[in-house]
Image 1: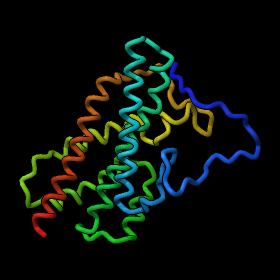
Image 2 (image 1 turned 90 degrees about the horizontal axis):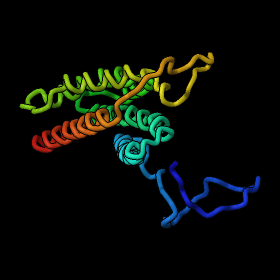
Image 3 (image 1 turned 180 degrees about the vertical axis):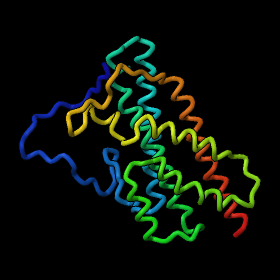
Length: 211
């Protein structure tokens, strides 16, 4: 089992869980400073990406020990994090480059109203990427992004599969003994997000060149 050794405290009903720690200390994490712009989406993505590696590292340790109780439970946060990385990065791309496609604030609000449908979000984002890169000889194939995003969406189309065991109607979220090859998934997902980051870097470089 995963074990964390921390100071034991006596619980009290008057305890406060979320307390401020300003100015910054080694015990604190600050988050309100990032605001709500496209940079904030990138920060969320970076945080989830770090969690992606941390969870995988623990899963890999458990795999070597054959610890099924860990293998078959870490799969839930791991796969959820993969999906949320895709969602936050797609929304980051849209919000960052929307102005280059003359997309206004109202359209941005409508875009964010797609809830957790990452495939619809990508279909709205791809034309922006195409527009920015249309005059460039890009080394990136957006058909690959189409395929990967669609597969992540199909695996968990409502962002519920890895969060809850049943829906509000008490119907099981997963209805059969399914399995996923985590090692295979990790290699491909890691490469995919490096690919997405590469697209972002190429667009940024292109825009800087023409400024």
